[in-house]
Amino acid sequence: MAESVDREANRALRARFDEIHGQYQRLRSGLDELQTKLAQLRVTERSDDGQVTATVGARGELISVELHPSVFHDRDAKALSRKITLTVHRATATAATTTQELVAGYLPAGSGSVEFLRTGDFGALLGRADAVFRGEGERRG
View 1 (spheres, rainbow, N blue to C red):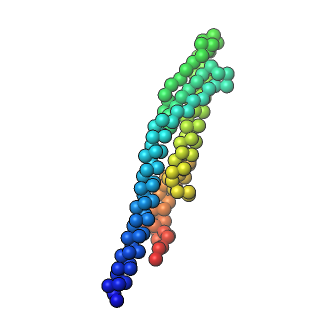
View 2: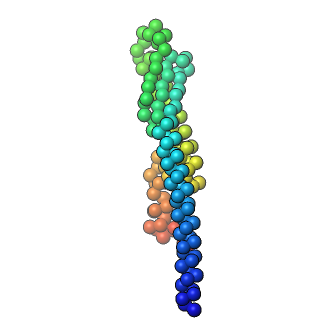
View 3: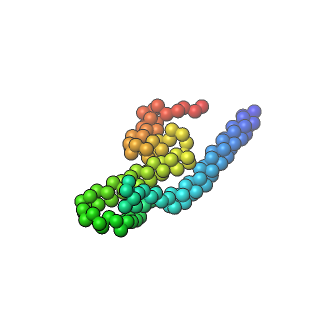
């Protein structure tokens, strides 16, 4: 009888492993797609007057800045500098939000990773591990 119980337990464990492995494969496949989307992501913002155009990548890295020829008529270097900086900051903020939304679509809802991307709070990223170490993790039986 113990042998049949062991076989049933092994079947249940195997079925659970197959389920988890399938979830991993779907997640891994999705992450490859996500990586491609993030590598291709470009966000472009223009200054309110259209004189400055900034393009950034998924991490907010500056790819290009374009200046309309009319910026040279003003001859106000400080104003131009502020305009460029503001436009780049707006593009970077939009890229961060877009990246967060893309990543959130590939991770489980309520994931510490998604919360970390949104807030930059390492506590959110490590929250589940902290709970496990404190003995507050989910118990499965």
